[in-house]
Length: 321
Image (tube, rainbow, N blue to C red; front, side, top):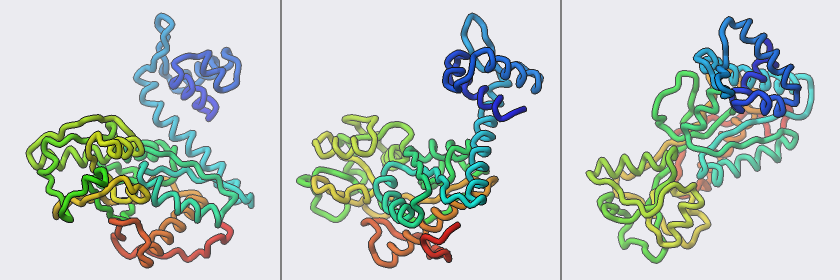
C-alpha cells in the first residue's frame, strides 16, 4: 500500500468519477486506474462498484475512506514537522473554531501569534463543533476551539476547558427589556431567528425552550452568525447568541436569561493519538497566554470568564521552535 495509491483512492471516492479524479490529481486516467487496481489487489477486496457507469464505494471502500484520509493527513503533518526540525523557518497550523469564536477570541490570538511567528502559515476552518470534531478526528485540523459538552464523547480527542461564556437574548436596541434579565417563558410564542442545523446554539436554544415546556416559533431559520444578527437588527425576531458577538453592534441589545440562565463552555481540542507539531504547540501556548492575560486585565469580552487559572507559557513570544 502506497500513499500515492491512497491519494488516488480518496480522489475517486470524492469525485465518484475516474476521469475527474485523474484530472484533479494531474495524472493520466489509465495510470490512476492501474494504481487503484493494484491497491485493490493488495487489500484483497474491490473498493469501487462500477455498475452501469456509476462509481460507488463498496463496503470495503467505505471502511477504507476515513482511514485513508487520516493516513494522508498524518503524512502531510509529518512532512511539516520534519521541515521544521530541518531548520526551515516556516510551518503550518490548521485551526478550527465556531463562527462566534473566529470573529472574537480567535482573531486576537491569531494576530498575536502572527506577530511572533510571521513565517508560519495559518489555515482556519469555521464551523459547528460537531463538524470541527470530525475534521480533527480525520487529521484535517491540528487544534480547534469547540463548545462543550459534545453531543457524544470522542475517545480520539483530548479537550482542555478554558472559558465560560453567557448566552443572551439578542433583540433590536429599541426593544430592550426593562429588567436586567429575561425569563425563558418570555420567548413562548415570540418570533425567533434560528441558526442552521449543526450550530451548537440551535441545540442550546431548542433544549432550553423544550425544558420550559414549549416549542419555539421561527420567523426565519438556516442562517450563519452574521446573517442571524442582521435578521434580528431588521426586526425579524430575537435570537439566543453568545454575548461576545454583540460587541460593536449598537443596533442590538443582549439580555441574559434569568438565573441560572444559559452558558456554554469553550474548550481547546486536539487529537490524542498524534503529537501536535511544534507550530501547533506554539499556537496553543500563545492562545492560553492571551486568554490568561485578558482575564487578569479584565479585557475578555463581556460575559466571558476564565474557568480556572490556566498555565502561562514558559516560551518567550517569538522564540524559535
